[in-house]
Amino acid sequence: MASCDASADKKPDASEIGNAGDSKVHVFSSSSELLDKLHEKWSSVKKQPYPAMYSSVFGGIILDPAMMVIPIDDHMVHRGHGVFDTAIILDGCLYELDVHLDRFLRSASNAKISSPFSQSTLRSILIQLTVASQCKKGTLRYWLSAGPGDFLLSPAGCPTSAFYAVVIDEDFSQCKEGVKVITSTIPMKSPLFATMKNVNYLPNVLSKLEAEEQGAFASVWVDDEGYVAEGPNVNVAFVTHKKELILPVFDKILSGCTAKRLLQLAPKLVEQGLLKSVKTANIIVEEAKGAAEMMYVGSTLPLLPIIMWDDQPIGDGKVGELTMALSDLVWEDMAAGPETQRLRVPYA
Image (cartoon, rainbow, N blue to C red; front, side, top):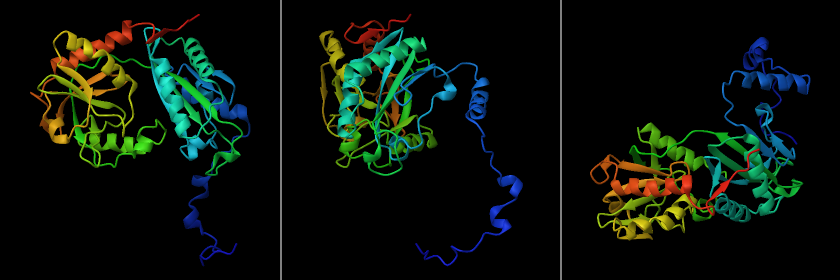
């Protein structure tokens, strides 16, 4: 096809190319040479942060970090056609694995991605992966992709979808220090994409960076009707001056598994007379900023106290007693809750 650019046939001169010595790129002559280079990168790492990965492309569990890769032509890479989810590993137990798997497959269905395995097989793979990792505390993250195949928009050329998972060895503890947040100016996702845990997280990243640039921990989205929505990768919750626990309704935001578990556990504080009620509701910004207490709710937190929003103190500007009481409930559930919530990993 003829070019409409008159300069298309012009050959670049030396100044445009740069010095030949500077622009020469190494060509790896063999896979063994490339693997040596990858191992060289990881040889300086004192502690392997990713003790194990599963790839359906390879058909098994990988323990060598140099080989924990996915194909460049995977549609999750170049088109963002993929979904993901997470589970916590604490004291050798997987917390709320089945609840997360249920949401994972709902997200996949909404993204029009068919799993290469049944839910029971996915569950078995994740448990075996955790066993192989020997990790007793960390996170288990997993993805379903339209799969590798080509660089087109449609996944029609992908032979099969792909499933990936990785165990991340990381330390985390109950959050007891309060943080500052801002209202994000980054447009939030439409309900279709906000309620689906997909890999398109650029708005979330920009929202987090925006907060960090202003000296805050993270941000809060407000929808076009003026209602509080969610944080960049967490839910938010409020305790009113009337001792009501309120979480924004989930119709336009992600239904966080930890947030939903909080709603199940919080009535215990109602029984103790510490809270008056527990509910989800639309809450406008002015009402939210006037709350007695505010918190983020997410898997590894599980609750993070918020003491200031847009330079305005929440309540008395200190970590709230009810926030910590709620946090204790969820943390206790994570550490010593019922078997319906905690799956003990059968390490060898």
